[in-house]
Length: 184
Image 1 (cartoon, helix red, strand yellow):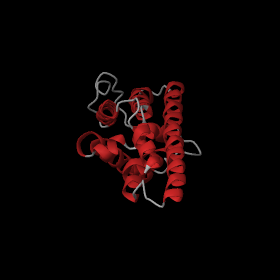
Image 2 (cartoon, helix red, strand yellow):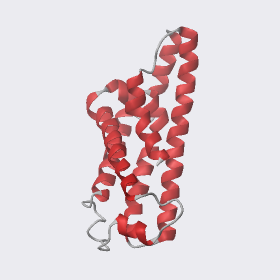
Image 3 (cartoon, rainbow, N blue to C red):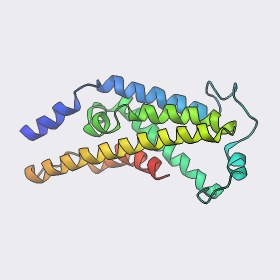
Image 4 (cartoon, rainbow, N blue to C red):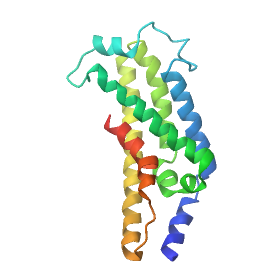
């Protein structure tokens, strides 16, 4: 019981879970609007090209086939579910160490870098878009690494107390979307 209380206390430290969840939701919304052409930069920075035509123009050995981009539907849906549940539905998800210690404000960084990447890529500023992609990558690595550290700590507690602190549903909701995004 004392170990469980330690986990709960660590999840309620700064940053404030509600503020963190709202910040993540706002950043996700901005990123989604920009990605789907309704964001603040979409109209002002339109180059009349889409990502597919630009990707076709700049082929590399790691440029995926067009159908591979459909994975973005899963990434966006998974991240939407995560931020929605954290803000609206579940205090437990909002205050869970996977969100507070794992995701933290790194998801804001991911979304802001992705929002900035869109116009940079649309205008074929490859150096700038590479900088933003690197920021996205580093922030996602931070999220996944920090979540791994949380899970490792929790598994140690679970093995000594014979309890389950992270249900499998938390993996699919709070961890998997970020692992999928990083894997992309």
